[in-house]
Length: 77
Image 1: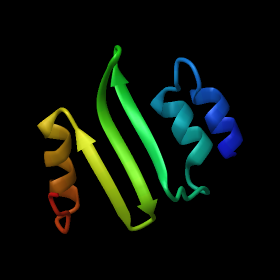
Image 2: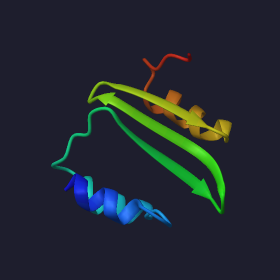
Image 3: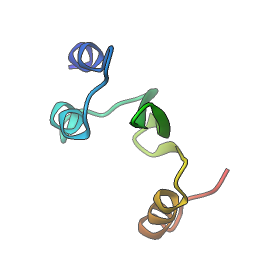
């Protein structure tokens, strides 16, 4: 599965629905990073260390606000 994700994400990358179709619900990523772009600008980086520890970096504060709302135990770094 990871080989397929790597192949599809080379070059132009892959859309959210494609990523979800390859990972949900049976794949847990460890030490993985996903990057989101709007046009050619990096706007989101998700780093998963294990199933309980994520680092989320976003250009848009609304993304972080939504995460804080849905996950009250979240900590700002």
